[in-house]
Length: 331
Image 1 (tube, rainbow, N blue to C red):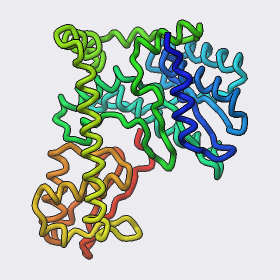
Image 2 (tube, rainbow, N blue to C red; image 1 turned 45 degrees about the vertical axis):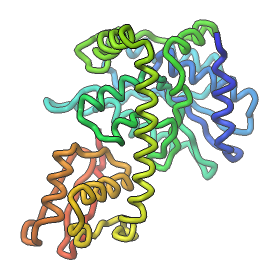
Image 3 (cartoon, rainbow, N blue to C red; image 1 turned 180 degrees about the vertical axis):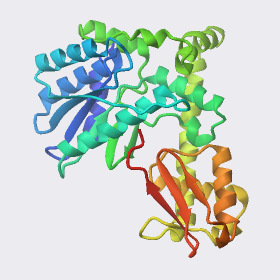
C-alpha cells in the first residue's frame, strides 16, 4: 500500500497558511472522507500551530443516518478532534432533485459554520472526492451537454463563500483509498444507497464506467486528461474575459449591458457567464443563458425583464445595469 500522507502533507504545506489557520475535515462517513479525517489528524500531530475541526451534517435521507452520526462522533472523540454535527432540514419539492438539494444545503450550511469558527487566519475545507468521482462527474456533465467549464469537472482547489475548498485526493483512485482505510483500520460507513442505479451517478459507477474500462483499460486516465485540458482552457478564457468584461462591472457588481449588446452572440454569452462567476452562483443551462441574453441585452426598458431561480434573481434597471440579488436560503 502506498501511504497517502506524504502527498497530502505536501499539498497542505504548499498553502503556506498562517499560524492559527483553520483546517476543516468535511465528513460524509465514507472511506474517502474518513481517510481525509485520518490524514488531517496525522497532519495535526506535526503541525500544532494550526486549528482543526471536523463537520458532519445529517440531512436524514437514510433511515440509519442517526446511527452513522453516532459512529462519527465516537471516532472523532477517540481522536480528540472537535466535531460539529447538525441535523439539516432540506426543502424538497416535486421538481427538486433530492441529491442536488441535499448537496447544496450541506455546502451552504458548512460554509456558515466554518465562518463562525474561522478568524483572520482564514480556513480551508477538505473534501474527500477522488479520481473515480472526477470521471463520473465528467460523464454526467457530458450527458448534460456541458461546455469546457462543466467538463473541467471538479477543481482540486477553488474559492467559494470566501473560503478555500480543497480536494487533496482528487488524483487518488477509490481502490487506493480503500487500501489506505483498511491498512489504517479506519471506521467508515458503507451506504447501501450507493448501489441504487436509479441514481445517475451510481448507474455510471456500477454499469457504465466498468464496461468502458473493460473495453479501454486507460479510459479513466483519458477522461482525467481531457478534464484537465478543459480546466486549462477555461482558466485561459477567464483571463481573457477579465480584460474584456471587467470594465463593464461597477463597484456594486452590476453589469452594464449596452456595450455588451453590440458584441457577437458567443461573446455576449461568455460575458454573462463571467459576470455570474463573480457572484459564485450556479451556472444556468445554455437555454437559460440564451434566454438571459435575449431578454436583458436585446429588449427595451418597457420590457422590465426578470430572471429568478432558487439561488438568485436578476433585474435590469432603466439605466441598463443588471443587478443580481442572492436568495436568502438556496436549500
